Amino acid sequence: MAEKHPQYINSVARALQILELYAQTGKSRLGISEIASELGIQKTSAFNIVKTLAACGWLIQETQNGKYRLGTKILRVSSAAVRTLSANELISIEMRRIRDLFNEDVVLTAPINGMPVCVEKVQSENSLRITSVVGRINDFLRGSTGKTLFAWQPEVFINRFLEETLPDDKKSQAEIKATLKNIRKQGYCITVSELDPGVASITFPILGKDGYASYSLGVVGEENRMERKCFRTAIRDELKNSVQRIEETLYFMS
Image (cartoon, rainbow, N blue to C red; front, top):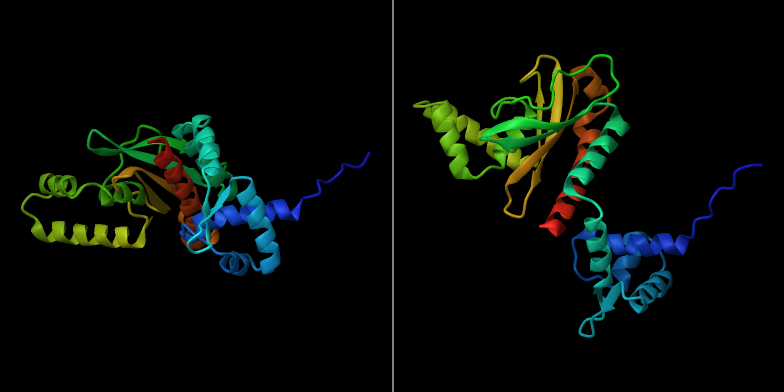
């Protein structure tokens, strides 16, 4: 017997897209015209779906401007999801997702006793593998995993580390601080053959509510292979999405 394919309901998909718009646009309130424009649908369709969501408690219409904001029901569902999924489980899921998409090593680094340490790694299936292992102490000044973690540490920690590592070398300290500033401005760090020859990596910070990095999440692989897989664009974008989901969950859990 031929397998039956599911019939997707467009109106349900549209309703979910409307809820996701609040996260995508960063707006707390949206009007019917804005929603229709963002999704590229007729205002009548947007109106009917929004009214249904409002009737079910997912959206609330404000009397003052007629726009809609998220209702409390979304919070109840979010908290239920958070209760059933620990932070470590979510990070592992996202790491495996990235590995499965690009078949490259995915590395999680955390500051332990004042040093960047690889605390989890999801291995690729490539025959040519990267030597990083769980428990390896990385470098704050070389390689994207450590540099990213370092860039989003408190200023007092950065200053103290540089003073201890490069005493009396004010020029090098200034250059490193300028590099860290550029990393923070860009939002992530890319390095090639900086820590290990022939190895390229891209890493994002996982930030807490205080704005400091509790982890860094990176993709690491052989340089030419990473270039073929467009690690500066495609891998970067997927890694950014994973980090955003992790940060959102950590925010609700804290």
